[in-house]
Image (tube, rainbow, N blue to C red; front, side, top):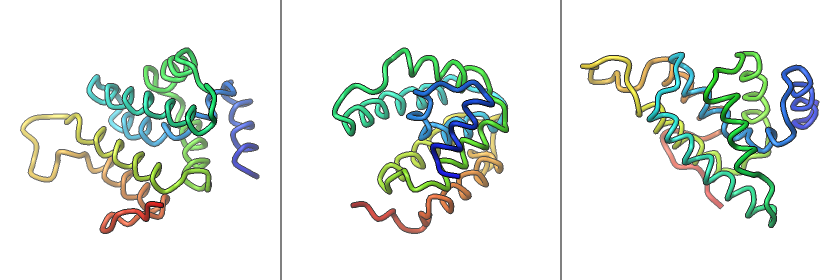
Length: 159
């Protein structure tokens, strides 16, 4: 089943909107934000910045306005302000991680934002020398590096 068909099935199962397809690149950021079970303001601020850049990128690539502020706010209400079902996040994650629809520079941008979100908040102070980023967030990030075929030891090949 192709990327679009998988999305359409998830859309049917979870009442997704057509515009949500264009926000798939936000899914890893949303996943890392929710790993600790809460959406903290500093994480949301980083996510909001990515959304602004993402809308500009999509619109520029298309040569027309594809996404509106209303589309973004609606998506954020359902994914960032309320935790979506894990089955939905997993399904959407699989579309972006296993698909070929994301170019290398965008993958690196997604990873950098995920790192920023991971480092934005800590659960407790003081934290240990290697505890700024939670263990489950580190595991998620390393898996994302592998899925995007980017070695954490060398930069991505940028066109």
